[in-house]
Image (cartoon, rainbow, N blue to C red):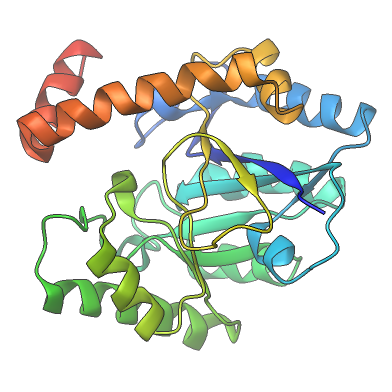
Length: 257
């Protein structure tokens, strides 16, 4: 049976609209985050990690997946407690080079999460765009991140989320060679659990994402999902035309830095 699963892509969590050392555009307020989890609980929709869903062939359709990119400290202080308290699981894609830096989780926090059914996965060693680095650097980024997490936590790393969603067939091939079994992209849409696992789409949660939209995504409502899909292809075209660096500069100016 074909099962469609909405996969949510979070980053940092803001506290009453404030977030430090992270892009505020991608930071959902903790109250909106808590309200969304309460909504899912009320509808008996279970929040799970991609790791758990990929290892379970008998997934029902009352599931969504939560993922968090970059390893921001608020993933531990604000996001993780609500997941743990409700018996949920999620994937945390970390950049291993930044662990313990200001604004990022440290290894003690990450280890606690790992020991409480959270999935710690790779976002690369640094936050490089993988469509503009050499093959040798791609291999080093993916292997260093994977080995570091596995050595620190004793848990296998099987999923990679490319920073900025920048991904190529070459990156997919190298990731597979190094033992990654799945790739979670930034392409919006819902994931068919029976489809290929090296192109798992995610729905980007922004500061401006309303509760109504989050609920629509959780219910796989096509009208709500169409909008981020259309926006994605428009920005993808701009990235291809302008290049990553110039596109990022324009984006920062438009969003006020």
